[in-house]
Each structure stands twice: as structure tokens, then as C-alpha cells.
Image (tube, rainbow over all chains, first blue to last red; front, side):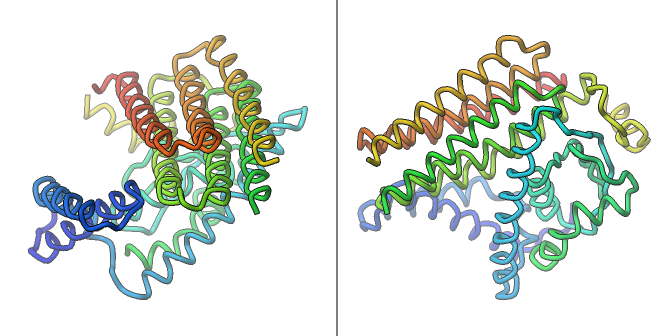
Length: 171
Length: 114
Length: 86
């Protein structure tokens, strides 16, 4: 476990507080002060009590560049989500079931835990790929249509398009 | 405008229908999971997005639902795939490669943790 | 007009739940059944949301949220149980 500085703790607590507050406001769908106050109290208490040791958010960089890349990443991710669905629907509906599945291994350059989690989730939601197991820096991916089972080529095809954005956001 | 939203909802429900057809047609567990994650996520997101267009006043809760589904769906399909792999559910005969079996790294840690 | 289209959408979602039920019944392995259950739940969330629009009750959306949360927890716990690490 890495050293846990005071700044990191503050950052974790404030990010947890922000997420809880956004959820509260969206759930109540209002900005009235008498509904906001209990929300602030509960969010503050739970982030102070339960976020003593959570370190997941320490990897997030809060710079303008990271925000811009997050937006670009979301757009790319949604385009890929649509493409993956059209692809999978085509496979499901064609009578001969054109699938060619297998489990391939890919390597990632990302170091942080949070970045790897986001990467694994994105892989699961995009064209015919599903993360089966994660060990250190290698992901084992069930691919519905195996084009190439070499580590380098598979990594280039599956991971690279997300990696260059996530690298800036999470490091 | 409302009709536009209703059509988006209709497209979402069609995607959900494709997901369930795929669930019945696919030959093994892993391919069923593929269809299950991707198609149901997009189907539900489209249905809820259509409702956001129809009733903008409910946007807060609907956006919360969309984010919730986007966070949880890949996680649940990943844990199911992992569980299916470790209790050795067989692959379909179409499967070409299985790099996970060849990898010593995983086997070793799995034995050590027992 | 909107209500007609939404009714058709609801019918299609119900049909998809019924087709998933086939996989739930023939199953073969437990993982198949859990996947079918998961797909049925996610479809039901869409169904409940459309129903909330048609009856005009926003409270149904809360039910959809809690339902999704519970089914997610259920899938995680079943997976842990199947892996024998519970």
C-alpha cells in the first residue's frame, strides 16, 4: 500500500462528497434549500465516516486537460457502443451465426487501479469483447470474432483507442 | 418532439428484443454474455433516453438510472464470465483459442489463494 | 399517438422478457439461468420506466432504481457463490 498523504485523503473525501451530492440532487430533482441541507449533512457524514481508507480516487487528476479528455473519451465511447451493437445485432440475426470466439490476452500500459477498472468496463461494452480476467497488466478477453491471437496485435486492435485518452486522465 | 422520443423508446425495445433472441440462439455461456451486456445496455439506455425527450422534467432520475446501468452492467457480466470460467463451463466447438488456460500466471495465483 | 407507440414498445419489451424466459427454463447450466435473469431484470427496468410515463407517476422510477440495485447485488453474490469464494 502506498503512502497515504493528507492531500490524498482530502481529495478522496471531497470527490465522494461531490458524487453523493450529485446523486442526491438528481434523486430529488430539486434545488430547494430545505431538501439540500439534509443531503449535505448525510453526504458529509458518510464521506467522512466511510472514506477513511478509500484510495480509489487518488489516481484522478483534476486538471482542465483531464476534463477535456474525459469529454472526448465519452464521445468516442458512445460511438463505439453504437458500433458494437450494430455488429452484435448483425451476428445475432443472420441465420448462420457468424461467430468465431476465443479468449485472447492483451497488455495495458495503464498503471493506476481506477484507470484499469474504467478500461476493463469500456472493453466489456465495446465490439464483441468481454473481459474475463484481469491479472496485473494483462487482460484476458473473450472476443466474439478473433482476428488475431498475438498479444501485440490484439492489444493494438482492442485497447489502444481507449488507452491514449485514459493515460492522460488517470496516468 | 414527443413522437421523436417515443420512436427512440421503440428502437430501444427492439434492441432488447434482439438481445433476448441472441440469448436463445448463441451456442455457449460466453457468447450469451456478450449479447447480454451489449444489447441490453444500449436497449435500456435508448428507452430511457426516449423518455427523457418525452418528459424533460424527469431528466434527473432518468439520467441517474442511465449512469447506474452503464456502471453495473459490465461489472455483473464480467463476474459471471469469471465464475463460468473457473467452474469450467465448456466452450462451444467453434472456439478457436484460449489464452487464459495457457497462462501460468493465473493458474499459479489461483492455486496459491486456495 | 405517443401513448400508442409507447404501448407497442411495452409489448415488445414484454415479448423480449418472455423469450428470455425460454433460456431461463431450458438453461443447462446455472450461469445460463443467471444471465437470463439479469437480462430480464434490465428489460424490466426499461418496462417500469415506460410504465411510469404512461401512468404519470414519477415514484415508479425509484422502484426501477432499487430493483436494478438489488438485482446487481444478487448477480455479484451468486457469482461469488459459484466461484466458491463466499
